[in-house]
Image (cartoon, rainbow, N blue to C red; front, side, top):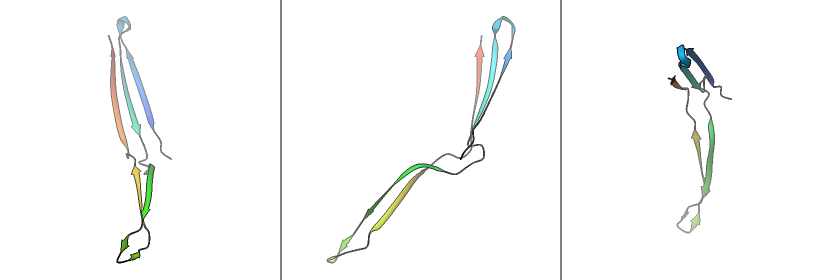
Length: 75
């Protein structure tokens, strides 16, 4: 499974003012996975005969490692 990491630190100033710095790292170990997908099959008709089934499988790969950083100001 995948692992996320979230950290934040708040710097306090006078008169209840503050600055919060945060970072979020999603999929920290770059785990490759897909959340879902679909499949279907069909048969082709050609020259009076029905061919063998053809199966199509598709999936939705998810993002690798990605980072989100933020700053919150309280004035």
